[in-house]
Image 1 (tube, rainbow, N blue to C red):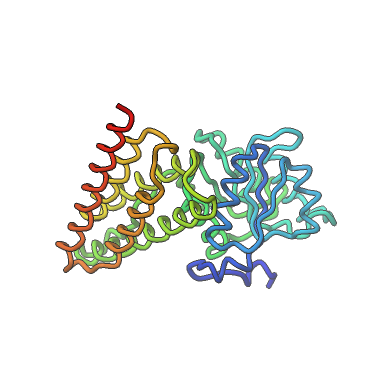
Image 2: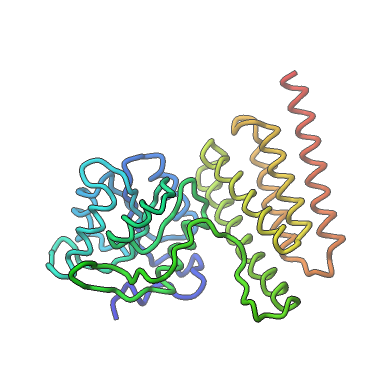
Amino acid sequence: MSERRQLPKANLTPDDLSGLKVMVIDDHLNTVRLISDVLRAAGVGEVYSASDGIRARELLVHRVPHVIFVDCHMPLMDGYEFTRSVRLAAVKPDPRVPDPQVPIIMVTGQRSMQDVHLARLAGVNEFVIKPFTPAALLSRIQLVLRKPRPFVVTEAYIGPDRRRRVELNYSGPMRRMSDPDEVADAVEREMTRGTISVELEAMRRLIQARGGVDRSTLQMTYRVMQHTRFRARQVRDNAVERASNSMIAYVDAMGGPDACDPEVIDVHFESIRSILAMSEMEVADANAIARHLEHVVQHKTKMNLVATG
């Protein structure tokens, strides 16, 4: 078994991720920085980057990454060509490609099935659609390491088995039709709360790593809270939904990162984390926390209107 397959297996805690080496390939420096910051904040041990596929191939032999994030459209050598060149080494050994089976996750703003088809033909393992959230990046790493697909080598195709259906946009809980409703609801609620907790913690660490809220982290925070609200609504977690709405309302009211108070954002993260730690029997306490957040936002919004009026 290769070193790659002996790396993180369970829930990819920071301790697990500390042994991981990840390469990020993108010609947009802001995207590279954002992905790198998310991964480092989550606890990934080594993150390094390249601005195109040619430079990335030069780095492969020296760094031997466990996972690669690659943009689909880049100059010189794009993500499709880079992926094909890595997979080709499985049949035509190349000293510059030490591991032809390395998991490759394509980062793309393209959502058409044609683009997905081209990427799968090239041999990518998974996709991350822009704009992304911390959970989207980390969940793909967890997927390729915990559930690696068989590697296929044929005359027409080289890469991971493509028979698994690709779900680009689904973010809700999974349910078997045979599960009793009350059991499924409890399981879904617990799983959903776990997902929310992981994503909020990753977002909080990213903001800390960047020294505060900037435009990109504010945009990402907004998307994270939209996802949180959606997930909470699915499992009827009223307090978490209210707290998420409070954060969204605050960002909408402030209108930009320069006007947002990092302490207000952090208070929301900490408050939601407290709510998630409560049992279903502590509904009143959870709603009291959500109500306090709503009052904080109302107060901050009034202060902002006075200051700008």
